[in-house]
Length: 290
Image (cartoon, helix red, strand yellow):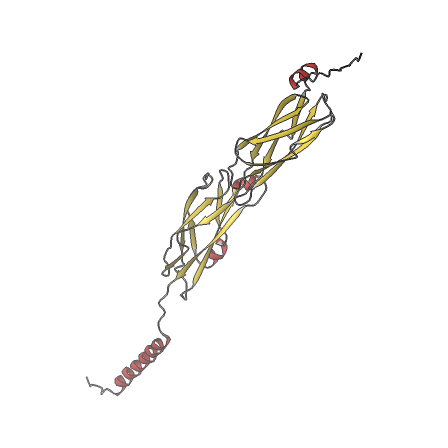
């Protein structure tokens, strides 16, 4: 008689295994919780975060963790590493870099949301964390004009239209000045700059008319170009102890009709000749007795 012994091994499905072992508690953190990013009109800005995933216990020998970051503003994100394996209950770190496009307006706040998941031993556990990214203002100014050159007669007045454009990403105000005013005044010129300081939104401009007038009491007139240097400086940048400015050169040409030297010389000698002739005639004219 033969006796056959049969051992039975019961294999529990993941759901049954999970019911026997309690699920691990997962935490996810981001450091720092908020940051400011600096961009410019032609270069992006980047900020980096250090994240960490941690579990209170390992229900099995190892767990697989994945990280899914997103920014509600639609900015570009890089995350490394993901996925990765966890074999202990220590914090497992990952890094996230967010790139903010150039020219992004000041004050825009992007929210970075990170979803973390662990999987293993029949468990799928998730957690989330958030951080904020605020765009810092940058200041920039550009002087523009429809016409930087004009001609006037001696003693005449010219007119230029000066457009001060805000090429920064925040509302700004500007100080306008004639940089070479002392030099112009010493030459007898007067320059009038009209317009008050105003707040200029990003991408817009403020117009300032300029009225240069050439001197009227010069002893010797000649045709010559005169340069008027205008400078616009950001007042907001000054408040932050920085210098942001732009300069522009306007040119006024005094158009003088100078007589031909040959003709001037001929006229001079002709005048002398006429005077001599008149004197000779007077001298040789017979005197009339009275």
